[in-house]
Length: 198
Length: 323
Image (cartoon, rainbow over all chains, first blue to last red; front, top):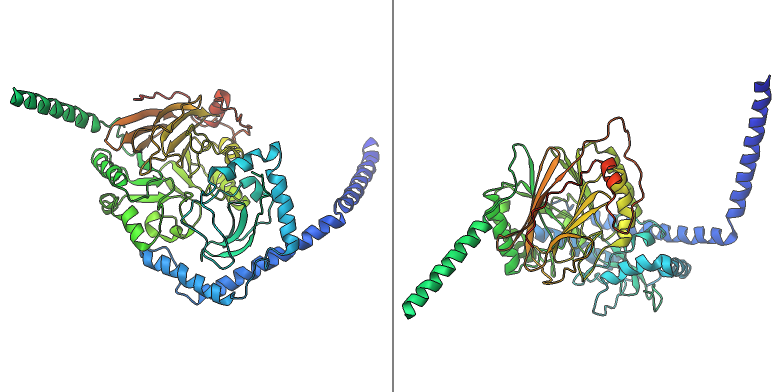
């Protein structure tokens, strides 16, 4: 008898919980959050469009497989870079990091580096900050004669994920979107790290 | 009188050279049958004469300790990366080893570029991070320059799926270091070490600091820094509570032998002197356990004996250290 009563109670509780969860979910998604989702969707769409273009251009080159021929590795990178630069000759800073996306990134980066919680990310950046001043430009070759700054892994957990063809790279206070195969700067956010941080 | 003095000096020099060469030829590794034998080098790729000297010493030691492969802990090509640099900074110094069939397994350092992964002799097979197995040992080669969520997820999956007795991770940035120039990569440690503990990683190799250091076991895990196989920051080791042994007076490389539940290590200088050696004993896996226990690491650097026991690592290092 008791068993028969318990089952409807369980159903009732589950219904209440489901309703509460759906209400909370509705409340959690504020208009600001929706805007953020929209901005990051724009970003990832543009990233994907870039990667599609890069793959199409690379398909016109002899495929690069692991090889002992180092000239082939270097030439492949240069050839791909030339093709991308040609295809994106009108590319401008902000094509992928749009104004809205840049604002979002600024907020995330500032929050990641600020205060006691940002201490470790600041330290990561400080470890390998290049001593010389480097000016980054879209479609330039990423400077590989300076040591790479480790991109703080806790920041990478917060930024939109990238496909393996691209990485986020800090050079000084600037954040570059780097093509890992062509070695090009695809886009950048100058002064992404606010002055004084780290 | 002059002749006698000269003769005495020559004898002294000869004696010293003989004693040095005898010491230089010392091998502390046991050469057990069917053991896994490898070397580890880091921050080597500058093409300088010191890199060539270390490589020569590796070749000499291989005559007594025939290691089959080499872990490259990053900064494989420092400075320019033209085809000639692959020759001068890798192929020529290690030619005798390469000719003998020794394989090199590289990870990226902060001076490397991502297209090095396509260089066949680095055995990265076009990948930014990868894993491979040698007998009962599983190696995880990671990219510590860019520890994104995809790499972390991949690492967790691979660690979880590995049934190997020994799990060894290596990457460029040391999670613990007493080096004065960079120090410990604490942010990276916060993400990686819980995985190492959870899935029973016993030993970690890194480079980046241009010194040799063996850190006291942290949460049961043994950490080595070998970042002086070409580069060197002389006098840069600030011995701290972390330091079990270290050497910052010359270039170094490591030899490692794993036989059953024992890992033997020997750190050797460019001159062939043994600067550190010892053995790490792996405790058998706890029977009946399906998963390693999840333990949050103490980042204060206190060795966790209970954790060590739980993840199957002995704390019975018997180091013979020459400092």
